[in-house]
Image (tube, protein in one colour):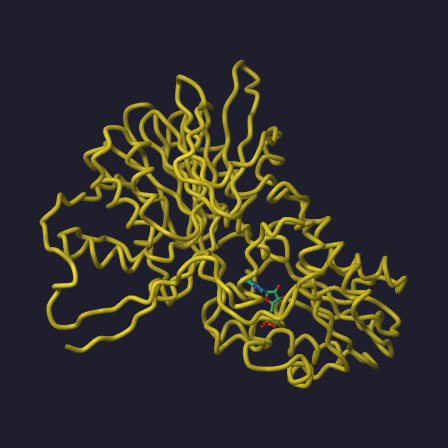
Length: 492
Ligand code: AMP
């Protein structure tokens, strides 16, 4: 019998934002605004499902929230409940089929799900479920949760959801919508953020909101109440708000990269201001890697808060020596290599008058493949910089993320096989300095070891299931025929 090894997640990485509303007459409109504020978490597709108490209404499309949710579309998403999702994924997968929320009609009723994160045993479960007769409609790992919900013997949805989630591993900040309830869940390790908010309705009453980041509450003038706790399921219905701890507590593994790069600096993530973390990173970077220079220049936008911190600590003036064109997508987000190369020039342009003849400290948040950073160094030199010292406000990224951040394979990560000296040469810089891991932990105020740092250490907090695939017959699993939840979608 031949055996082959397949990675459990098939390198299927999602970057996403989620937003939900309970109890507001304009739930879909608020969800659209919430997605607008969370757009940085994914620009490839977006979707909203609303409920008017008896029916669920779905609209999903490729693109950004602003292009998709025009007034005519929002008008067809009625009711006081809604969830929304914005997504970017790699793996050459641009299909609308994988856009979220996912909506199904199963033995637990009509259910919609929006998921941020990645499951690490999804492929293993998928294979088992397929052997038992389940039919999958998408290749997103979120669908595994859907099938496990449908198979649960529990009488109500929250029970079935708990059953399903206790069988999966990995990262999930999940919103679930039914005709009359909104459920928000965070995995027991709390990899990805998820926050609860409250909004006073001018005509009376209050609505509950759930979001990936607090910046979405700010846009709506809503109040940030608290985080959804790791291992907590918050169920919001007409009878009120209920908190269920569906899984035993596990050591926290909050994604440190949210503070480094992913979240917006105006958000509070894991109870801490992202801007504060980034400025602290810049200060620590200046202490760990000082250099004599004339100006500190950020790579906008992601390098700005750390460059401010570097400048404050080193007393070297902060100057906006690179200007970003905001009217194009983030280059990293474009999956095609050809567009990415072109994108650097489209995206950034040096201010020659600031840079010419100067010794520059160029601050960015991270180096992934190194290709963008190399082009930026070249661009700054071509604008007349005398010296270019690159400073990075996180440690070398040596290992891919399996919990919901889009990183390329280990081979493509320049720091996985090159020393900082080699990377410095590749970039064409005069010097290169990365902030250390202890400094990063200090910057996010991690005194208790509550953060996942696997992209910097290669040490993963969950098993990464290496699935044994039996190629001839399927006798690794039983072949009991199970009910097949047939996804029924009402696209509007
Ligand atoms: P490169 O020099 O080609 O490795 O690109 C590094 C740039 O990509 C940095 O400026 C980061 O801000 C950005 N970046 C890092 N990680 C991600 C990510 N997961 N999604 C989008 N952009 C990222």
